[in-house]
Amino acid sequence: MMDYPTLKLIWWLLVGVLLIGFAVMDGHDMGVGTLLPFVGRGDEERRVVINTVGPHWDGNQVWFITGGGAIFAAWPLVYATAFSGFYWAMLLVLWALFFRPVGFDYRSKIQNSTWRKTWDWGLFVGGSVPPLIFGVAFGNLLQGVPFEFDDYLVSTYSGSFWQLLNPFALLAGVVSSAMITMHGGIYLAHRTEGEIQARAKRAASGAALFMVLAFLAAGLWLRFGGIEGYVITSVIDPSALPDPLAKTVVRSAEAWWGNYRLWPALWTLPALGLAGPLLATALLHAGRTLSAFVVSSLALAGVIGTAGAAMFPFLMPSSSMPAASLTVWDSVSSHLTLSIMFWATLIFMPLIVLYTSWAYRVMRGKVTVAHIRANSHSAY
Image (tube, rainbow, N blue to C red):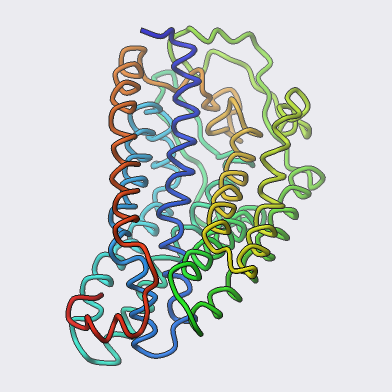
């Protein structure tokens, strides 16, 4: 059995991998949903767009469910505190996601233009709202969340839903929305041809430029805009049992840049977030759509990794009671729980990757209007 500190670090990395996997896999079909009403002109073209992700979207949800389950099992205090403080935001995500299964399954069951257009906009909501809310959540984490713990480690959230919608958090939401839209547009360009592909390329290129500008603006705001980070000033015992109140924390304007000064190699992550969308756009217009999708995936990993590396070891800082901030060292499950979950993950994560790869290989190729006409009763 691995030692406790090592398992704590491994689970920080594994949750990061799951979040990136969710952004890459479920992100591209959310991006396609976001572009659906704009890239598809007419019912047949919109059916083409839907059928690029229709066979896969529910399988991609596994990353979302697994990520949520991993946070619940590995970081129970983070899960409980986040779902308490972000309750209405999480409900908004859930309500938006309701449109996806119903929209994919029922949209083409009735040959009525009003019915189908309504579900097209439902799929747009289901694809565009979750990335925006997740980005807003990350923006609030970087500023600190107003929660406190009592002596029994019962958390109290003193903020409100509307406080979450502050300017910096909304900018982070723009970054998230733009990168998912870019990713979906690139995937759509890879799976389609003709006018649909041309529109998808234009949409992906615009979203990529918007993402780069918003990501750069967020970084400059975080550095020069007076947003203070968090620093642990007491001695940390990585082997200790979880107790978030057993440390002292101060706020500092330089805090979120400390890890980058200690490990300069981490600058690779924001570099990916800035250069990746531009390179993906160049590859896209050169006709190398699969390469563009791979580079786009790396750009998503760069953006998410940038936030994770800046915050480490913090997971959920507290703005109202800094000492209660949740970190990698003091908000985890027991040694036994982390160990069992680690071995389970080693078994099941490769299986997820294998069956997902097989499914995409079997159903690869272009989706065309001719295909929709020839399979009008079996296609989405």
